[in-house]
Length: 327
Image 1 (tube, rainbow, N blue to C red):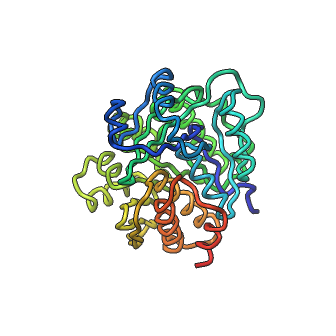
Image 2 (tube, rainbow, N blue to C red):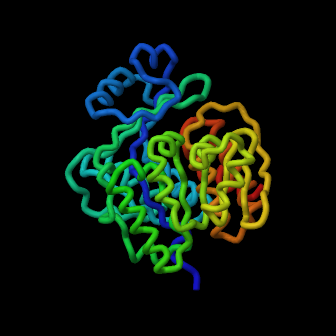
């Protein structure tokens, strides 16, 4: 019997403020380039005022959310558990997810402040993120929808959740429910900093073997303690039945449970690398839940992530996603 949802995701709900920034702007405002930095609300407000004329767009985001949106754009059906507040950004987030075809747990919104991320993109296409988590830092087991989860083929867990005690509890609970309902478990490390600074929690998050793991080269080496791509590839086999290591313009390596599959990269002129890994995961999950082989899903994901870095923002236009499916 087919499931209602291809993927049930859980992660932070962040409204992205996409900003065109110069190196001079970052230096002048003491922003560390190329990093994802958690900041206090007042600090973020100061930066937003300074960058007010450079904001290109505002849209719903968050690592796993971007993947769920990608899944929907390719024609998949997803459900997303997250937390936003009853403010302007929260209302925007809820409406956008609905418009994009992603079901959510968002009903009556609580008081508070919705999380925001200032995504500052410099001319060299590097992204620098300053994030205030707001109400999403309290995401917990209360945001889990057991009925929706039971109707999914995969769950997809965002690695940023390891940074909070309630997030860790939510990961444990959602894995328990996935096993109860025979739902496959997918996990993404999300960011090298999460693996480095929350290494014990990251190992806890993937304990008990999971079905599908997403990592980039840096995350794979940091998690396994290995010093090469080859060694980290071999080491990941004891943590996941299948996994993907994305390798930027070099493509990706996929372990299908038996062998390594090499996915070709698609070198492009990068404009904005925001969301490349999220796009890869969303496209790959679409492939895995819609009849594609590991090779075919990897090829689609590689083309999609190359396309997304050649433009501003972490998502594609719907017609571009359709074109990629038909290539």
